[in-house]
Image 1: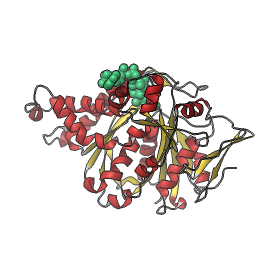
Image 2: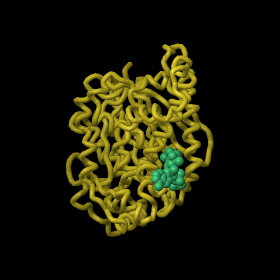
Image 3: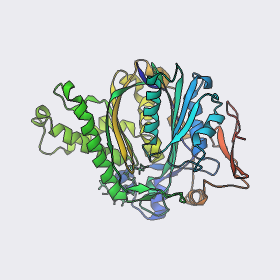
Length: 421
Ligand code: HMG
C-alpha cells in the first residue's frame, strides 16, 4: 500500500523581526546571527494569532479546494505550545475547519518530535485499515519562545505546517518499513507547566541532538545492510531535511552524518581527501541549503520545523526532484528522534505549485524592537478582555478573538471557517 503526504499547507504569523533589528538592540554582532546561527529574520506572533489559529490556517491551506472536510477521518495536532492543559488544539481546529463528527481528533506532544509522531501514527492508521478510504489531517503548530536577552532569543519563531496523509499520495510516498529511532531521557530543553517560555541548556541541547542523530541513523543503517550496493547510505538522498531549530544546526547535523558515513564506507573512504571541509560544504550546499530558505526567515517552529523544510523544497524544486528520495531527521528534546525516508511522486509539482510559502513570507509586516517586545510580553495563553483585531497585513483568515468566561474564541474573515462557540 502506498501511503504518504498528499497535500501540504504552510502558514506563518503576519509579523516579522529582522536579524539586523535584533542584533542592534541586543548588541550582538550581526555575523553571529546570520552566519553563526543562520538566522536572517524571525516570525513574531501578534496578539490575534496563537497555536490554534496558526494550525487552523495551515489546515485550510492544506485542504484547499481539492480535499473536502468530509474526507478527513483523523485529525492530530502535534504541538508543545498548546493553549490548554486538557483541551486539545486539535478540537478547536476540528470546529474551525468543519471536520466531520466521526473524525478522531487529538493532540500529541513530545517537544519538536510531536509532528512526526502524529505523521507516523496517521500512516499506521491508514495501513491498519481503520481509515476505510478516508484521509488524515496532521498539523504541526508551534510558537518558540525564550526569555528576552537570553541566548535562545534569536532562535525563536512560529508557524504551522499541515499535511493531508492518504493512500496513493500526490506529493511524497513515505517508506514506512524502515525507520531509525533513538530515544532517551535528557534535560536539554523543557517547559514547566506554569511557564510560557522554555528552559534550555543550549550547548548541551546541540550535543544531545547530534548524539541522537548518530544513533537514529545507525539504527536506520542496520536495517539497510542487506540492501548495501556499495555506496554510502547517506548519498542515497537527493535532499536531507533536518529538524532546524536554527539553520546552522542543519549544517552541523549534515556534517556529523555524512563524515561518519563516508569514512565508514570502504569504497568512498579510499577516495576522500585528508581535509573534508570543502567537500562537506559543497555537499551541504546541494542537499541541505535548499531546504532552509524559509526557515532562515521564520526561525524555529518546533514541531513544524522539519516540515517547513519539506514545504520549501516542494515549492521550489518539486519538478526537478520527482522520483528522488528525501531523508528526514526529526528531533524532539527530552528526547526522541527518528530518521526516515520518502520519495517525491511523479507529478508532484502540479500540486506543489499551490503552496505559496514565499508569497506568505513577503506579505508579513516588519516590526520594530518595541512592537516585538510588546507582543512577547503579552501572555499569548491567557484572556484578552479587549482583544486586538488583526491588522490589514494579516493573511489569515482565522484569528484568536479573545477569551470569554475562560473560553477561547476564534473568528474568521470568511472562507470555510466557523467561529468557535
Ligand atoms: P550562543 O551561546 O548564543 O552562541 O548559543 P555560540 O557562542 O555557540 O555561537 C553560535 C555560533 O555563532 C558559533 O558557531 C560561533 O562561532 C558563531 P559554531 O561554533 O557553532 O559553528 N559566531 C559567529 N559567527 C560569525 N560572526 C560572529 C560570530 N560570533 C559567534 N561575529 C545556541 C547558541 C544555539 C546554543 C542558543 O541560541 C540556544 O540556546 N538556542 C536554543 C536551543 C537550541 O536551539 N538547541 C538546538 C538543539 S535542541 C533542538 O533542536 C530542540 C528544540 O527545537 C526544542 C524541541 O525539541 O522542542 C530546541
